[in-house]
Length: 400
Image (tube, rainbow, N blue to C red):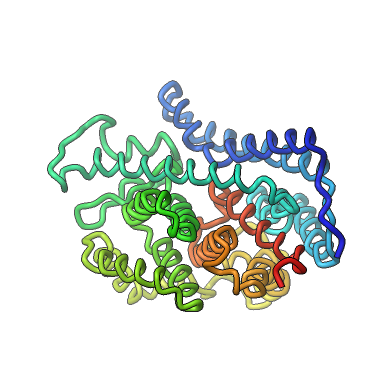
């Protein structure tokens, strides 16, 4: 096994500056856009928003490419397979001018190499992720106090209606301001409750891995409460499945006790009960359920062989099959899951490995709905955690 090559310290600093810039541009592109909202005429914001998004993503990709060129990493034979498939799909989508599919191809096949072999950045990433997750969570709490404050005896009116407020972050969100029962589905700084919910699901799962350290308890509580307030059902389910599965797999009594307390709180929570009722109601809605399945999405060979574009799906996993076919999709899932299975003995013994494993599995479950990890707001964090797990497999002699 060859050691992982790392750049010089000065090159490391340059790479870190590039990576930090990418994180800021992509993670906070909607809040940055919101700063411009009030000085732009509303009828112009949609076009500006589209251009702003593409420019920010393009800038991030340029930095990503420069970073990959500067880095000197040792690739395995399997890595060349992913890189080859990635470039094939990138070229294909460039030919058909499908920007969204192009972004997805870069994300799924090449994005993980942005951090490959650079676990020395982990401590910086860890602090950045905790900070951004708390920023997102606190903004959700503020939204709740301002717009749902009447439920707790408060009456605050600062930004007009909720839809007027959230449009600042995402003028294309036609579902902004949806009400379930007496509560808004809070969209957060990403301007979409599903995007914000998936972010908080992954961050809650990540912080849960560190919950044995008391200084992370409050961060977890804040993230978890904000997750519930988004009323994103798949996000809450993805968090619960990931932490429950690994806690049962390792029979970790402390984590199971924490989960037991969480489940009691959830069971008696009005918002969660409304989500459960909505889930049961939707389960009996044939049209709604079919939107997440293969019905009327295309011919079966489209999903077997891939190489398609031009469609959006309510299920990101089905979209993967439609874009890339069954074999590349299985390759991608294998890359995410294999390190977790191989080093499962480290679960709840190595906090870094545990947190990244919980977060990656939680992120993968959000693929059952549109707007999960591929939203890029959480995507770069997801890629970093995936690369951390891959770094364990590159140092197999240490852990086995």
